[in-house]
Amino acid sequence: MVEVFAGIAILCATAKQAGMASSIAVDKVKKKGSRSTILQLDLCNVHHQDLLEQWLQSPLIAWIHLAPVCGTASRARDIRRFDGDPQPLRSNERPEGLEGLSPKDSERVRIANSLFEYACKLFHLACSQG
Image 1 (cartoon, one colour):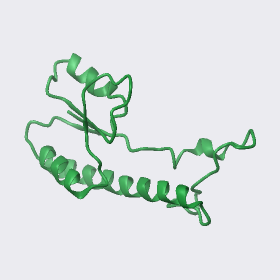
Image 2 (cartoon, one colour):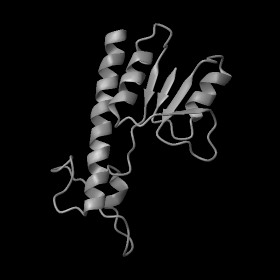
Image 3 (cartoon, rainbow, N blue to C red):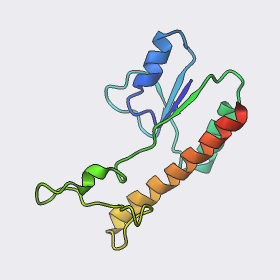
């Protein structure tokens, strides 16, 4: 099992406890409190993508779990309770990002969009593997 965008790798740890000892977790950073070893790959980097795609072509992979980052896409950003709450970065009309975002938010949305697109590619790769 490969857990991509693993966060603290709870699913990977659970899979290992259930007997899937060779399960791996993949994320860009190792977070404090991780439940399993995390292989650090920057999936915006084409070389890291190539490496992951090679692994996923192994007949030993039972399943792949994808949980792409959601911070820029969270509907919770639409809830405005206090001054200073995070601003929405997307809308139903502009799912790829609102116009007029700050450079920092625009970059966050661009990276998230790239990772969403890559997650779709991984899904298609997994489907083609059966």
